[in-house]
Image 1 (cartoon, helix red, strand yellow):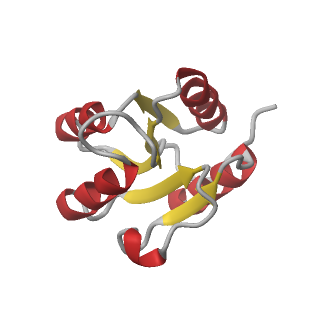
Image 2: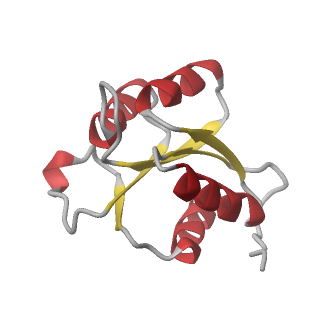
Length: 127
């Protein structure tokens, strides 16, 4: 069931960063069905490459626990430093993340999350 968005015809571009392939695909599909453009990255390094190559990404949706040289929190800080206008949504199975551990303006959703809630938040960013 697709969720219709009432915003301009310019689609909001969201970068989904998740190392678990099925989770990444499901979240990306749900975001795309809601009318957004969903890009995918399996780790922070790939996410940085995508961010460096595009100037239309308006939000990232990142898991915290990922393999590689940078976890989702470090990625969030890097994004806030290099691309301050990009909205950041962080997710994890960890029950609580200290506000001070996240960059200013980030949102946190504990897994399992309701994808409709995420889409609602993205819709408010597009407004």
